[in-house]
Length: 416
Image (cartoon, rainbow, N blue to C red; front, side):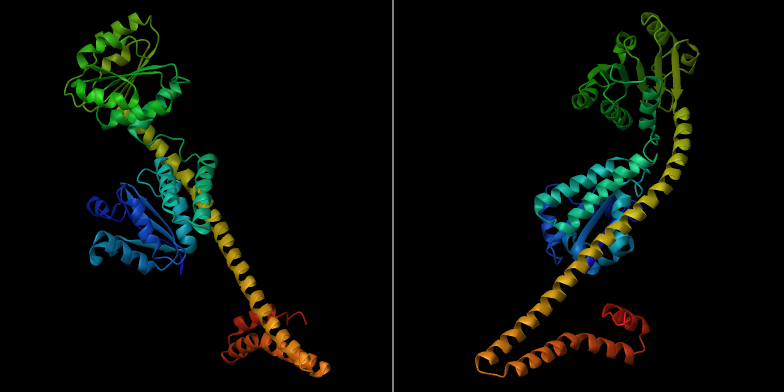
């Protein structure tokens, strides 16, 4: 029985299998209770995202947990096993720390996974499937993930087009809290851009799209204003930042439209980021004074540089997770030693109490006090040295010098 981590992720399994192994939010509570019943201490946490499903259990057998996963999702053993990874003890601890720190993610260093791990832990607390060890493990993991973010540059550099676009805006405008942003398009990329902008406190967002209904659906989430593509000229002059990503075969913003907007702005600078292929913004816009135009190629070069930077930071982060997982296992072993000491002391005291009671009975029946005391001392000595004597004899007969040395040290024989 040990601390175990069982899982599959984007590296080991197809999307099809990951979908079959995933746990829906409405079933996760009961699933964790069921999983916890397979452990001795009732401790279990399930981390389930689009890229991974992982089970963390204390005092469990790897095979039991794998069998539970197969039974719960009614999966074929031969289909699942090639995609499963199973870790124990320190390796399991380090894996969780690496996951929470973004070291095992599809995008190296991405921050969303930490929130997902925290959410999984909260759900386990609500389900009543955590106790001292799992609680300490996850709290330590959150501290390690924070340390990785603080002590390394793993999350500082943009590695997605959407994040790179917003990072560039932050670099040019010292703060985004007073800026007005025009987003052109309403697809996944623009939606992600909007999320990053909202996280950075952008004051005003306007979303322009060919179909206003799609733009309105997105605007509800980000408290933005929806307009059609035809209305862009009316809003362009108010925009400090323009980020565009549509599937249009022809440019949406031309040099003349942007030039007119800049005149209305009295030549206050405007940042334009075109992350569409084919382009949404005419290349000639970059020739205008006060218009700073960046394309998807510019962002990709930034992303490549940043990925290299993240890989360097990841090496530092790996050292942190290695050290911290080692410290956690030292804590686990300290608990084990405390339990062993408590058990050994309790056993010895029970022997003492038993023999004292026997001696007192003999004295009350008129037994010779000197004889009773000698018998008590002999019996107590024999009972206390019985187990160590057997272990010494066994180690000696088997020629196990390491065990023999440990026993002599534990019994204080080498001090003599």
